[in-house]
Figure 1 (tube, rainbow, N blue to C red):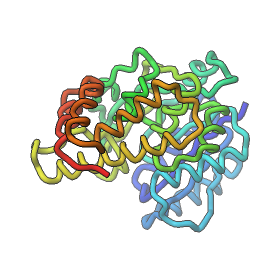
Figure 2: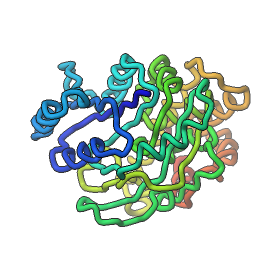
Figure 3: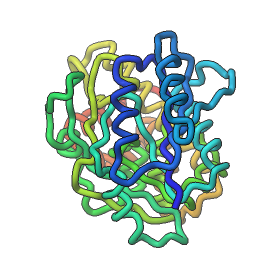
Length: 312
């Protein structure tokens, strides 16, 4: 059985050594840790070089001279590269978290009971910690007001937001191959994996933390709320408009793919697009199809405020 973890790094010199140590100390070892640096300007490449020289049989650096591609494209490069090794299971890893020692072992126990002939994904909870690994919340799911049972989430909810952290996921070979075949670099790798597994396979949830999810000022994504700062702050309005425009673009792209969407799922995607792009009366009508979907009142308010913006 082959297991691969993929990591895209960018200016992660403060925490990356601690994360690599946690990957190398797993109770069930990894076969490879494949790392691509996305154009760091700090000591991250030097640290990666030190680790790859110390652990040449496990740590592999992707050298492509493509520079800074951004988080989404960098991870899809890694997904494609990892597929060449034919892994049975693949895990995403951030550069600044710390895996608990039995993370792989526990996720394996969960995913191996699923049908291996279909795409499959298992994900877990995580503890939220500050930059010094001091716990700020015992559960990222509860912190984000996400209740993962029943699982998987509905497609309707996934069109609005991804409730799952990529760093808690494990994918099987069928899901990995299908993601690379469709090659959707428009979506973040966590949302893309979850949508494909929800539509074409199986999703399961481990209601236990398997890592320390570090939050600090330089997080590439981190836990971003749906409404930030004051309700009508100009920056908040820009954030909302950008977020929903991205969601519309993602939904349009989904309709171009060969995933086995049902008729109802295709209608949900079209209704979602129309929620943002048609005339105000049609938008209001579609709003009532989605208004109860966001899991938290702030996200519900953000969806309501989206009616006041224009989208392409």
